[in-house]
Image (cartoon, rainbow, N blue to C red; front, top):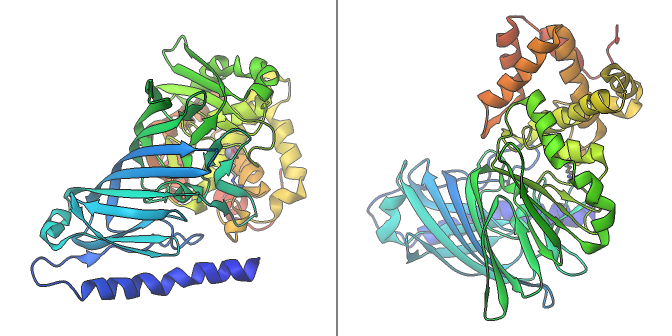
Length: 468
Ligand code: ARG
Ligand code: ZN
């Protein structure tokens, strides 16, 4: 199916430009902004994200009917213009747009591939001047499409036996709401989900309210801390839910498919302990809520560190739990500036597993390092340079990423100083974005050393350096 997919990708390149030219023909004098870019030039996904604005808040109102396989949504997007805008793009895959307004006025809508273009009415265009905050509302509906990513993994909106689950790393989120779907644009979220009575709808953040209206269950979830859109989730189905508060005041909410309940109970009971252990290593837990969603085996192909509440495709083992919870610091609070930097997520989350094994399983970190070092799959490419999108979640990003972290520890040569460095990193970029260059500059600044050789050998090098 590759040539077909390539064709599908190529199509949107021309169409939006044409559409904008056509829409622009109707423009008569006054303020003149320019259209925001259709993508952020991420080398792996050039069309992902959009230029000219920065989303501060998503208000999503979703009505999910699993039996009819239908989603109806209203996305209320609050954004700040970063240029004078005459039009702007949103990423949306599949679904029909019924209506859109910008600043309360009907906007001209164009669809071309994964690009949705909104052109505000002339009388509100000045409200999209650089620096101003504006609101766009998009009403949409349909049967959400599944996204097959470069590796052939299914994501986006996945059907389950009794509902659906939305997973979006790297590009699936555009299958269920329009937005600026690049990790560099983080925003707060309010998600309201209406489902048939008897089903539960779980999302990120805190459950604000749950009520029954006309025989339907309305759930309101709020994520106040900034969140990258690939970390947004909605899980609809029959779940056993549990709520509690940890000794540190973190609110826990777990939702487990009944088929997975017995097998996941023990490991989920360890969430507070894993969070407390992680906080000692990585710094204070960055969010007010935590938890997990455990689906039935096979409901999704991968586990994902969806913010606050990772999604597991079946009962997780303790190492996977440690991994996904570590992502709350590495990936979710400190988010890659671009997809190239994803080793900062996976390298640290893998290193967290090594640290866990050292503290709880009697396996020294050196042993984990040696095993990763010996594994040929880790040497296919450098962690800071996956050759293509298909490689973004391959072993070098995980195993060799963790080796980079360990080499930094060896260079620091003092465990207290090393963990202070790690906590300083999560603090410096808390709720923000960071690149590989930010990381190497940070480490060099804190250690006061030129570590060019370390980076060249372990982070950028194409061959296996001597382990010495
Ligand atoms: N970040 C996830 C994890 O390691 C993996 C996501 C994999 N995504 C993919 N398209 N293969 O916890
Ligand atoms: Zn991971």
